[in-house]
Length: 159
Length: 129
Image (cartoon, rainbow over all chains, first blue to last red; front, side):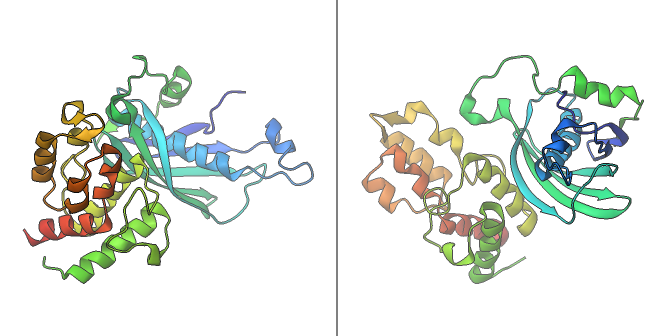
């Protein structure tokens, strides 16, 4: 299994906001354990989907020069369960980016219905962590993630 | 924009309640951010962001929490802050109360300089400007 919890971007405004979708499918093994008789997408994976949507938005804003790591979930509120067959829409926007960190706000919906609100703080770890040194290559943004931006030719305009 | 100290304190309290997930009554002026309210390093960034938004002020890096001075090994000898370090830090943090730390400048107690009052003092100086 690949650790990619969004299927594609449908909108991408560089440095500002992005929208991604995720189709929830019974082909996903984990749903059969969560739970056997009533499959529900784990809320933690909805947070991961937002972290990927918002994290790529934050990474792209600095041309993927920074290693962007989820540092804190500021807010995570859920309104209803997500089930196989649902298509989730992740809307993320950047509230602030600084040399050390970024804050994002996000909403998750399904056919316009509110699913969750998830706000995140990301750390640019090379400029944080009291001078700890990390490997030079950007291990956060692998080709799997970058290809999400190129595969569907989502425009990435500078605001 | 002129705000009373009470108004500043109330808003700072709201920021800390949201950022740290603590209860209203835990946030007194004397409470230390790390010791009493359980703040971790990333929380300081979050707090700075929230203060900027709440009070519509700009907080340059290292002004409220001068970690560059605090983490500078030059200013530490045998686990204690040197006189030079102390005077540099005091100059950088006019908003903090150094009376306890000066008596016992053990660097492990440095985080006690960051109390709720330190933030209120800082915000007051910024909004009065």
